[in-house]
Length: 114
Length: 114
Image 1: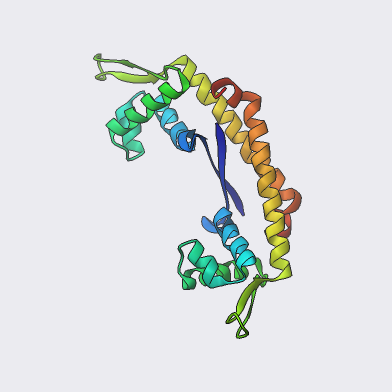
Image 2: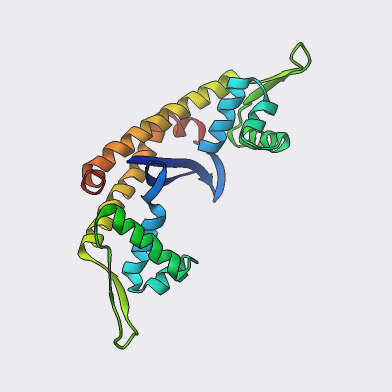
């Protein structure tokens, strides 16, 4: 039996950030490319940029930097501030998975899903 | 800023129970009727019964009991065991919301969503 969590943040009922957008940031970081990151998530390049721009506005933080030209035809990378942001979210998120499992075992899971 | 969680349990990749099915049980309990509970969730009566039956099989617990006839044309109510199951889930679930908020405040929320 596995416990699954989906987490996100809202402001005035509007989605701001969560597991979905964290995945986009993670892929940009790993692939060094918005095109590849968007494609991996089966998302349009334009939509992916829109998500990043809105998040930048909400947080007041520059999240990505783009270098055009060069051998590979340009790169998009996370800024140091974005890396810190993502790292803190990942830490919170994995901690929450463990907490949920512990909490569940206390009074629920071990009774019904043994 | 609000933190939102969706929680569910899987076995071998298959959904077993979570916030969605808990809502169905809660509505059956409140309304005393599978028809009304299904309708509230914009779900067919047949689909709602299917979900309850599958959950009963998975847990090895009888969750609902139906009384036919009478003034109101019959009722469907949770068994005592189902009430206990739901109550324990609700307790786990609300505790998790609070834990998530605390955990978030530790190293993430207070920095970026202040």
